[in-house]
Length: 238
Image (cartoon, rainbow, N blue to C red; front, side, top):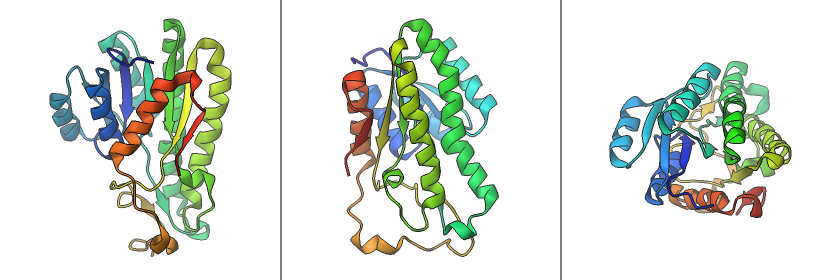
């Protein structure tokens, strides 16, 4: 898929993987809708990236998501790609996970992408096709102590995405999962944590590989977008 002049929504665009992806897609000629909860960061990025649009939205709130999709559609006249990147981590043993924290992470990591997909699918179908890229995680391919709560949200996102890929193929809408490994962003710092785990790190930190850069992950997302239906359903590189 040639992304020049296509309209691409990137959620969680104010930092980390989302920001790196937005910058890369803009460099490649796409019109990027920058979505996050941080007005100041989005405004600064919008000034830097040509033909971009900043839309403030909380991706855990269905009404925000629906309004965001409608705003992007009205501004650009179409939506070619949705990249569901916004998310939050959750760290701590299962027996100590606060249920309010789990519900908040679930709504952001699972319900948010689902609502965004439901909102954008009719638009893409009417256009004759489109693409959806959901950012999952390598934790959904493993069982790592203290990451079970977070991983469960990504397992759920995987199920939604792979099912949607099959359901939407007849409409020429391609759904792809990207599974980053450890990435050098503030994701860990911004994660919710069980009580008493505020300063703890995973036990196997010593054996952990060097984190990928957000820019490398952005390249993998671009690759998934360009390959479309000819590429794999899941991009796994670690």
